[in-house]
Length: 545
Ligand code: ATP
Image (cartoon, rainbow, N blue to C red; front, top):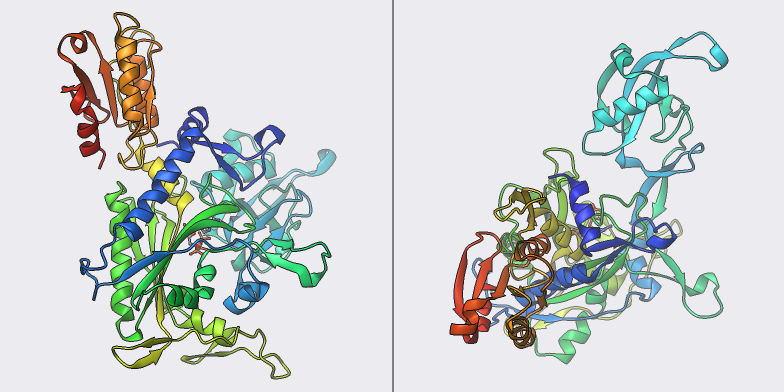
């Protein structure tokens, strides 16, 4: 699949628009159009329904060590600044960036890729050419070597036919392997040595609360929804009858000032997360971790991401965050990534008691096998916790403990993007009419997330068919998101619906007038069959599950 084709379809049919496009757009921000809003809402609804609403706390789910309960929260985006100090985000949530003095661009250090190359560099004003060796760079892309070829050709001023005079050395690598920045040619630079050394850059957006605007009023937009759940742990316990093990789910916006937002909505600065914090006894935490890892992986397959493009990857010990006893990523081979590479859809982490303890005691750091309070040079606790007791008393076991936490954390926008990529299909059009492209573009969305569930057409605009179709449309609209279309040839109308992933088309035709049946057409198999009007809603309901 060519990513540009999908991006173009998303814009043309109203799935996604660049934010503030009429002003030239704002990098890292995206708006969902009329169809996109339906698609994303369906993704979030399916997640909430499957994880929270339809979860049966009376039954042991496949692979779970016991029954459990689920509940929800909707917390604020701006929280007390101390939250981020204790969670570690204030000190640790950063990426390294480098700036280019020449192009004035900024890059995420770990996203720059380069390779040594030697060539003849022509001097300015006709001066003699001299051999030069530089480290040519580009931003990580689908095909790094092709991008490096272009950059080197540009740098040395070569024509296509002279490209083989370049001598490449060593593997493609990051700048980390470099000794000197003086020999690096930045991704958009014309000269070597214009990149700055890497600097830390905190990814949290800062804002001011209240009118005074001093440093004391500084607050942050949340970079994850999870912390709202931890700080409300006691409130949920005190206001409901839930008992450990239980999970709290939340869907909401998060903000990260990503240095290089890119790859469509994959890395945005404003995005939505769907997170669960699952609280359990330390002794069963490993079993719960495995349960959630497998449960969440299964969810993506149930929603249509089956196949080799989806994988579950357990982190190596060295990759784990300092508090984690296990993390697995659910990853998808997005088409904009280099062949064989995967991008994270969701992280499932065993976080131990790190979060609840941090909000009780203060910011924790690892010392050997222990998590201890971080102290400054004068021996004072660096960031104090709330001092509130966030432990749990299990009245059956007669035991008090700080629950361990399993966190399945996914991105609504990344999931939506994966569903868009997976759905995009081009096949031979069965109904190509004169002048029409023989290829049919269709979005094979799972019926649960398809933005439009069915389209209602009168075959022709006469003989009472439009009136009948409009009545049917009105009836179905009560239950499903449906569309009415009477413009153009029927083949074209089918094509329009295929392109936005509508699973079913309903046609009112001559036979409807005599026997009250309509034609139902399946988007993927193209099969057509007749259904009595009165049974249409039931038929659709059964097939849209
Ligand atoms: P990455 O390594 O890709 O930056 P991460 O490991 O920092 O991701 P988490 O902190 O684990 O991501 O966030 C949980 C989920 O939130 C991710 O799996 C992803 O689906 C989503 N997410 C995180 N950052 C972004 C972003 N900038 N844009 C869109 N979704 C995001």
